[in-house]
Length: 134
Image 1 (cartoon, rainbow, N blue to C red):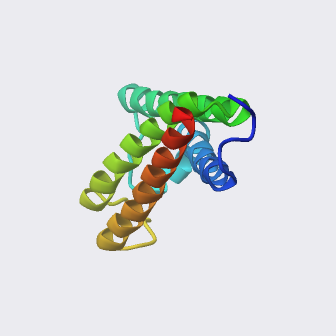
Image 2 (cartoon, helix red, strand yellow):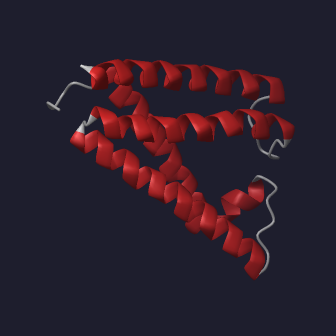
């Protein structure tokens, strides 16, 4: 696969997602006050275990995302895009059903925002799939 075949807009979308996930990783590992402001109780070892596991899993997706952005390999990019679609698709349902305390928007608007994000990710997936078939 030649470098540069992945469209710029897909790379920009992926970079924005990486920044969002890095913010989440920071919150999970370092800034527990930010988590407490959302209404999540992180008292005790069992809750810290869950928080750190979420951080670790999110960090793995960050590493995979950064890797595919450097390689620009369409087939590898497809794997990361599938993970993004599944993650955002789940958040599309979970976030409105269980809103956090400091959410800046209503549950319905949150749902709408996630629908747009997932649609853009699906469009990116279709675009990269066409590239990978060439």
